[in-house]
Amino acid sequence: MHTLPAPTRGLSRRALLGGAATLSAALLTGCGADTVPATSPSGRPRRGGRLRAAFAGGGANETLDPHLANLFNEASRAKAVFDKLADYGPDVSIRPRLAQRWEPNGDLTRWRVTLREATFHDGRPVRAADVLASYARIGDPKRAFRARASTAMINLRASRAVDERTVEFGLTRPFAEFGNVLAAFGAYIVPEGAQGFDKPVGSGPFTVDTFRPGTSLLLKRYPDYWDGPAYLDELEYLIANEESARINALLGGQVDYAHDISPTTARTHLGDDRIAITRMANSTLQGFSMKVDRPPFDNRDLREAMFLLTDRQQLVDTVLSGAGRIGNDLFGKGYQYYADDIPQRARDLDRARFLVDRADARGLRIPLDTAPVASGFVEAASVFADQARQAGLTVEAVQRNKDTYWRDVLTGGVLAGFRSGAMPIETHISQRLLSASSTNATRWARPDFDALYTTAVSTADEQRRRQAYGDMQRMLHAEGGLLVWGFADFLVATGPRVGGVSADAPANTLDWARFDKVWLA
Image 1 (cartoon, helix red, strand yellow):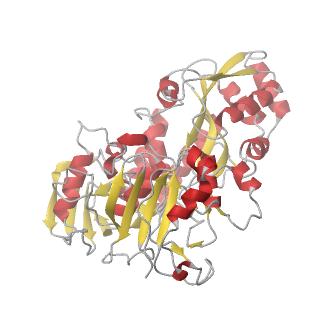
Image 2: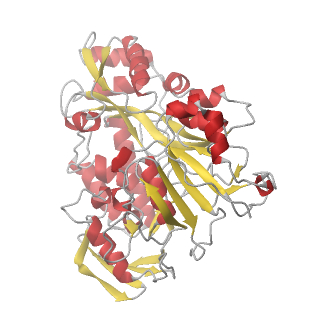
Image 3: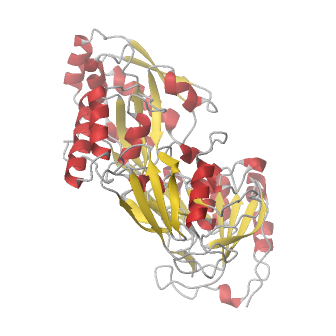
C-alpha cells in the first residue's frame, strides 16, 4: 500500500501558475506503482486512492454545517458527509434516499415517512428523532437556513415519531408534492442535538478527517454507508477561486477534478488528452425578468414583443459558446411536468415591430440591469440590447453591484438578467410566481394562476395535477414576464484517471458533484 500525501493547502493562482512543477511533485510524494492506471475510466470501477477536487470557495468563514450550504463546494461537501430523506433525479423528479417511502393520509395533510436502515458515522442508527430534530433546526426562525422556505409547511407540533424508523409529518395545508419538501436544497439530516460542525457526524458516504476553512477538506470513506461504500479511499476538496487556477492545477496533475469550467475553456482544450470535459445538460436557466406590475412591461403587447425579438440561438452560440440549448420562455425544460407540448417560440421581427408600435414604445429607452454574477451574464445583456435595437427599442445595459445584485433586482428596476439552477417546477412556481412568493422577480400576481397552483398541489390525481401544471405554463408562456432564452450546460473537467462522473445530472441534483460513485483508474 502506498502512502497518500497529507492534505494540500488551498491552491492560489500564483502558486499554480508560477510553481506548478514544485507543487505537483510535493503532492505526488509517496505514490507508488499502484497509482498507475489499472483500467480505462470507462471500464470497471476500481477501489482505492485519493481524488483531489478543486472548487471555488467562500473564504475563512466556510462551514461544514449542511443547513448553511449555499456555494457549490459547500453543497457538494454536504452530500459527501450527510444525507437527505430524498433528492432530485436527472429530470428533477424525486428519488428516495434516507426515506424508503412516504405515504399520505386521505386529505394530504399528514405524511408518514419510513426510514431505511442507516447509521451515522459514530455507529448510531438514523432515527425518527434525528429527522424531527433536523427539521426543527432548519425551521428555526432565528437562523438563516436556505431550506426553511421549502419546509415551512411542516407543522412540527403536529408531527411525531411513530417509532424509531417512522416519522409522521403534519402539514399546515394539503400538499401532494411532499417529496419536494424532503428533497429541498439543504434539508440534510443531522444527529439530534448536533451543534458544532468543525468535525461533524453525518450518515453520508464519507467521514470528516481534517478541515481548514477556505483551504481544504479531507474526507475518508465510511465503510458502512447504506448505499454501499465509496470506491475512493479518500476525497480531498481544495480551493481555487479562479477558473484558470483550477484548469492549470488539473493540467499540472495537482488535482483530478476541476469544477465549473466555462465553454470557452472547454473548447480551448478540445482534443487535449490530459482533460476530459463532462457536460451536464439543462443545468442553468438563462434569461431576463420583466416586471409586469409597472411600466413599460405592464403592457402585454410589449412583453410579447420582447419574446419575439429575441434571437435565442444567437444568445446560445455567443454567450454559451454553443454549450446549451434554446429556451421557450418557461422554466424546467426536460424536467418533470414541463409543458413540452407548447410550440417553440421563434423570432419574428416583423410581429415584434408591430407590437412595439401598438404599445407606442418605438424608441423607448429601457434600462437592463446586469452584473458579473456569472459567466456570460454581462455579455448576454449586450447581445440582447443589439437584438432589441432591431425591433425599435433602446435597451441599455446597466451594471449593478454584483454583491447586492439579486436583492436589488428582486424589487427594483424593470428589466434584469436572470438565471436559475435546477429545482422542481412546483418549487419554482411556489417560490417565484405566486402572489405571495418571496422571490417573485417578475412581480407576476394572478389569482387565477394561484388557484391553479392550489389545485395542482392539493390533489392526489396525477393526471389532474399534470393538467394544472400545463395550464399554468400556458398562461406564463402567453402573458408572463420571464424571458427564457436558453439552458446552459454545466461543465466540469477531469483528469484521464477519473471515471464515473455522471453527465446525466443537472447542477444541484443528486448525481451532480457526487463522489461516492467516482473512481480513479
